[in-house]
Length: 264
Image (cartoon, rainbow, N blue to C red):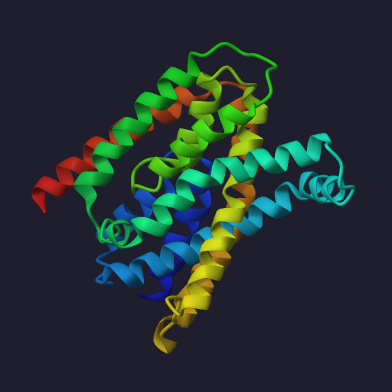
């Protein structure tokens, strides 16, 4: 992969990880447009590295929240921080199940399948439109809500389904506060990404070719910096109920992707 392409894809990942437009879908579209010829395993490796970068940007933006959670856990009490952490763990169950038992099948979807991406972007648009119409509440996420949101996160492992869009929309449609929904959505993915990378390192699946290391580094930096901006911006947008604009965007891009797939 060319270094310029890696930077472009890094910026795409950083911006779209937090905006509800599917980072994985945009990465697959970007790879197809840029003519990336990586095999599915190499393509997925690049995607994992970029997601790792945005996970770090999440920790930076929510550093105060993370500090309070860790501080509360160290008290070894049934406090708000402990309950929040348990909800995060519950939300991880569906995605962990998919990752453990369907990883090979999932890898094959990350090879420039723009038709699938286009269809899933339209599904994302429908979710966002309904969530935008939901009433504002002050309700906090319950334990049962956490599992349902986790299912949405597992489904969002498909390229084209926005992870943040699916989890925030699901949470809002369950009647939860929009700001709390966004906070939970961004924090719930961090353990999964770190766990995925740790698993791949231990198993030896995460191997880097010497000629691709520079591209990975540049893509990582681009994704991290753009992710810092996008994460902060998205929190503000969710508060203002602007999800319908992203729904329209997803429909337009989805139709373009499907058309591109037919032509290709």
